[in-house]
Length: 167
Image (tube, rainbow, N blue to C red):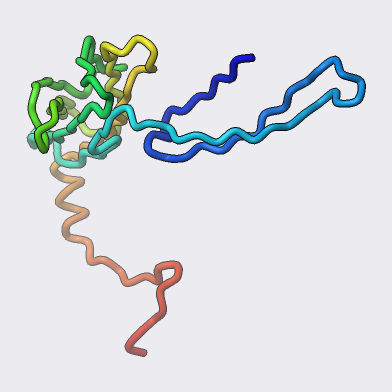
């Protein structure tokens, strides 16, 4: 019997699962066993997702670092954007705390106001691992919209779990 689990997102954590086993034994047709195991971290990605906000024409960028956590560091075979219409990126090798790492510089290239969502997909040299991904979101405003928001006075409001003070 072979058991396989999807462990994406569980790196560095302990995974607990209950497995049902169906048998032909009339006395024990169904058995449940608990499986526990530590999931090794494949890579540290910082940040895993981000939002770029700004005004049309403003230079917006975000640096993302990927540090392999495998015994033999993997290489990046292919890095692509799912859509690629609003972002551009470059990849370079680097080192972080003495470990091989990669730096991806993501830039907004949208030239009109609006919102977008994209995903950077990274295929590594590890064939038995799913591609890594980084979620990228952007909110690009017109100059007029940005100035109008800047001139509004923020109204005080209650935040959940916060007590009012000074009254």
